[in-house]
Length: 87
Image (cartoon, rainbow, N blue to C red; front, side, top):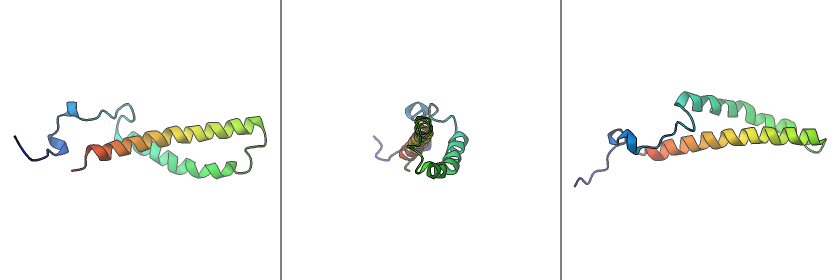
């Protein structure tokens, strides 16, 4: 029995997490990360407008949801990549 921990490269692909449901490759992750960096600051544009109308509220909630969905995917992908390779 070996007492050394195998490196990530030594682990069979079948024993690694399949992150393709989140992003098919790193470039897709980078695209969403860049989108978040460009889009998140626009949240300030809604400040003080939420109560103007039902339509405005719906638009704000839709905008926030689009940010939330992308942030979760970007975060999970990066976290799992890091956790999967800490050698």
